[in-house]
Every structure is written in structure tokens, then in C-alpha cells.
Image 1 (cartoon, chains in turn yellow, orange):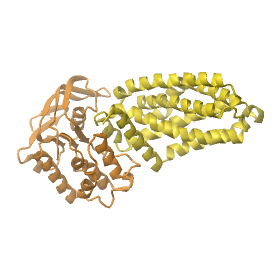
Image 2 (cartoon, chains in turn cyan, purple):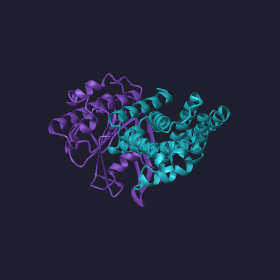
Image 3 (cartoon, chains in turn blue, yellow):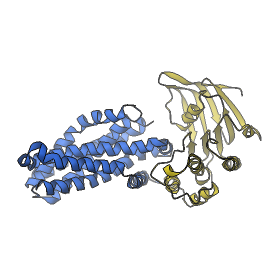
Image 4 (cartoon, chains in turn orange, blue):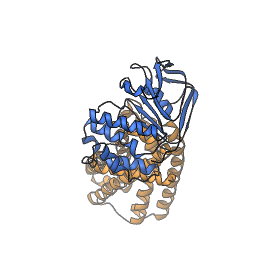
Length: 222
Length: 202
């Protein structure tokens, strides 16, 4: 079996478990939806319709959602020492990172879809370049996932990991959040060149953190 | 059952966890057949098995292992949210082996009618049996079992005894860490003792 097939198997297993126990995804969707609903109250209706403000709050909500989903995913692995069973399989350590990132990205894609539609409808946002918006959202999600998975793995055996993961992850996520916010705002307001440029930066982040994760996670997992 | 001959060894292995030395300069070679690892609570049996499985880092010494291994620890090691069948199918497919033996393995362990229930809805004994069914579903050359008789009823204990005997017969290397079941010591099983993190003569 190839490494890619193993990654696919881990991701498929992860999504099956998430489908049966969707507490992580439900918590993430609820969190994003509440933030979008409260946005007008917090910043005022006119500011909330500003594409940059709306995009920034959307991506901050998505970053927290990613942390919630990833931590729930690893909690499930720790419940009955299931992680050990995966790690001792041949190629298990290497497949773990890729599989978790793929599954997290897929789940976040769903959360982003719900949050995005809510934002567009409730805040009456402009949608000048829909294809570019989708591109930025997809690449933004792909850029968030590896960072969050690496941070959860690094904090996996720590007692205070629920507090530590956000503290570790959020500063590292700032460049991705800024890029995703700027890219989404540009796509919403019709600046195709800027949207594509920020998308390229997001892709670069995804590749860099993907390589970092593939290097660190197999060695760090215990 | 097709098996790949496997062996595992530790050479002068020392394991330190939270500044405590759990294993101290342990050297052990495991080959085909049954090895019974005995020792009191806290002696280091679990850590020794985890070291052989590569699940704990060695502070000193080295580990060697050839072939694929199956490690079943104190807990069933099955992913919640999936059924017993899905868990075992995942493991078999991950190893690149056909998953058509999974149904038979679960049935042999008395779980035919519970194979499609999420594992967290099973009792502790049923989860343990689902976990031990991996012995039949995965043809690994090396098998590490940590207190495998815990949570089992009499029928499942007999089933496990048969499964271990069959694995020995197939030429697999089986290590069982337990402080019960002295009948395992019969029939030429190798005995290894451990106390305070060091190997002893049992």
C-alpha cells in the first residue's frame, strides 16, 4: 500500500468517526454561526458590512473552529489508546499527519460553507468574484489545517493542552489569517489580482507547513 | 494464515519517563514462539512491551524489529465512533492485507451480532474481544499482548488461549505480559521476569 493510500485511509476513518460523533464539527459550526450573528451587534451594522471586517471575523472564527475540531479528533484517538494502534502500524506515523490534515480540511470546508453563506446572507455582503472567493476559502482552509494539527500533536500529552493549543497556534496562524482576510476581502470587492496574489501566498503557507508537519509529526508523536 | 517471521530485540535499553527510570539497561531478544513476561505491578512490563513496539523513546540503548507487529495494550485501542468491523477492516487494509477475514475473526470471538455497533457502546469485555480478534485478522509476525486476559469471561479466556497456541504454531513471536494464567508457562514457553525495571530470573 502506498503512502498516499494510507493517508486516504486515515482521512476516511477520521471522517467516518466525525460523521458518527459530530460533536467537533457541530461545535465549530455553532461557534462560527454565533460569531456571524453577533457581528452586527459587536461592530455595528455598517462596519459589519465592510468586506475586510467581515472576512477578518470569519477567518478568526474558522481558526478557532479548526482548533476545536482538531482537538476533538485527537481526544477521540486518546479515548482508548487508539492512537497507539495507528502509530505502530507500518507507515502509521507518516500517514497520521496527512490523514488528519485532509480530514480537518474537509470538515473545515463544511464549516466554512455554512459560515460563508450565513455571512453573505445576514450581512448582505457583496460577492463580486464568487470563484475567487471559493479559491481563497479553499486555500485558506488548506493553509490553516497543517498548522493546527502540528500544534495539537506537539501538545498532545500535556495536561493543559486545551489551553496551550490556542496559545501555541494562534500566533503562528496570524500570517495565514491576514492573507486569507485580505484575499477574501479582495475577492468580495472585485479585485481579482489581489485575490489571486493572496491565494498564492496561502498556497505557499500550506506547502511550507505541510512539509514542516510531515517532518515533525512522525518524530513528535508518542 | 500467511505470516512473516519476525523478531524484536532491545539492547541495553533504558527508558526514562517524568525523570523516573522505568527500564534500566534491559537486553532482550524475542523470536518465534511464546514468551511470557511476568512481574509485579509497576515492575515495567508495559513499558518493556511499549519499548519493543517503538512507542516509547529510549534514553539509552537501541531497539531492533523486523517484520510487522501487533501491539494490544491495557486498553482495546479501537477508535470510538467506528464499529468493531470498521476498526478491524481499517487495520487490515492499512497493512495491505485483504479484509475478508474480519467478519470471521469477529464471529470467532462471539461478536457477530455486535460487529456493526460503535465500539463505545460495547461492554469492556466485548471491546477487549473485538481488539483480540485482530490476532486472527492480521497476520503479523510479532504479537505483543499486555494483560490480555483482563475483562474476559471464561469462554473468551479459552478462546485467547487457543489463539495464542495457534499463533505459536504458525511460527509467530508472541509476548504476553501478565501476572496471572500460569498455565501459559507450560509447553515450553520462554519465561522472562522483570522487577524494578530490570530483567530477573523468573
